[in-house]
Image 1 (cartoon, rainbow, N blue to C red):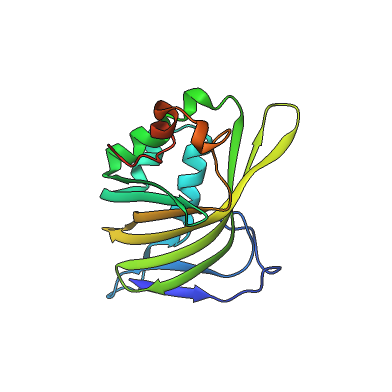
Image 2 (image 1 turned 90 degrees about the vertical axis):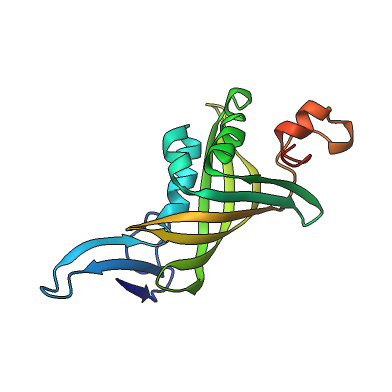
Length: 193
């Protein structure tokens, strides 16, 4: 396995799976005897797949983004903790429970993707989040923030072992103080009880 860092400026190259031009890390599996490339992929692709799966409401693809013992956690301005939710199926269940209440089309966009650390079987990525929505008439900004993802290599596939979502503003309607306990539980501010 070869991990290659491609240092390109943000105006150079083609748009990658994460939705932007510029630097990226790729992984190549090469047969040592024949030097044949057996498999290759962009490291940040797993995080982009998470965003795509959520927006397209693909529970199967969403769950596949995480390791079996994965963790999803978050916070709002480092003041209000969200989660944590532990285990692939628990993460899938919590995230997909939003879908019946979201009557718009969501678009999670990743920007300024960085690889913070990298080894043969683990990596840490950082990405800004720009979350947009559209009700069919007008697109609007829902929230901004960033994702920190700890990725693990499982066989030939990178998966998210821990995702930390840090939001710059609440992603729920209204004030937290006036939200019902059911609403707080749905938005994860009561943890995973």
